[in-house]
Amino acid sequence: MPAESGTARSLNKSAAKNAFSRQDRQLLDLHGVLVDGLADMFGKHCEVVLHSLADPNRSVLKVANGGLSGCQVGAPIGEPALRLLPELERQGEAQWLTCFTQSRLGTPMKSSVQLLRDLQGEAIGLLCINLHLGAPFHELMADFLPRVAERAEVSPENFNNNVEELVTLTVERTIDAINADPDVANNAKNKQIVTTLYEKGIFDIKDAIAMVSNKLNISKHTVYLYIRQKKRDDEEPSPHQENP
Image 1 (cartoon, rainbow, N blue to C red):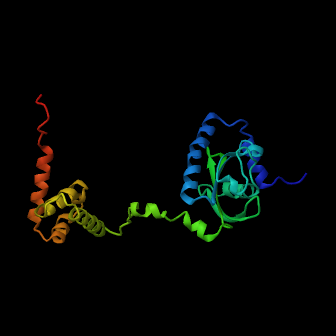
Image 2 (image 1 turned 180 degrees about the vertical axis):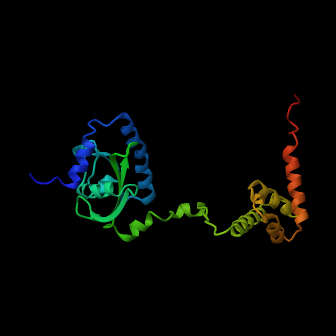
Image 3 (image 1 turned 30 degrees about the vertical axis):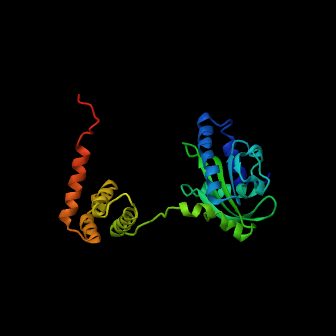
């Protein structure tokens, strides 16, 4: 009798669970929400597939952009995922593998496969992300760039290297926004800037008051004054508030 392959052992181990428990199915369903999210993130040339290992012949539970390879719900598990399954199980906690494969139609893909386990650590499913590299480069890149109509609405996301940079960027943007606001009088702009920065929590950061005073060319005492006035205003009851 031929020796049992690693893939067969992995599948037989999963099949030994017989019918997956309700908890197993719930865990797989929870991962299902990632399918559409990942496909939306990486674009129309990225196929995302959720597999159950309960029945390899009807493995696919959910798929996004399945038209790229013809993959459909209820389809059997593919050869690349089968081939990677034993290696994924051997890795223990490192349950993610990335490699170059081919789709069912023979097109090149970069694939990442994550092994999904139940609460006892047994394999119950796979989450596969397949980026189809046969697509024209400009189409692949188009999914990572804002459309022309959206570019004006894109807000920059900053990953600041230090606290000083965070405060500086926040202060500069606040100054620009308030200076451009025609509803704020010129002699009230500094106070409004300090008030806005207080609401953003900037003054919870050490040395922020000194940095703000230098940026606005006002004294630290003035910054403290504006902060005290803001706190006092926040503590005062609204004139429309009824007396108890």
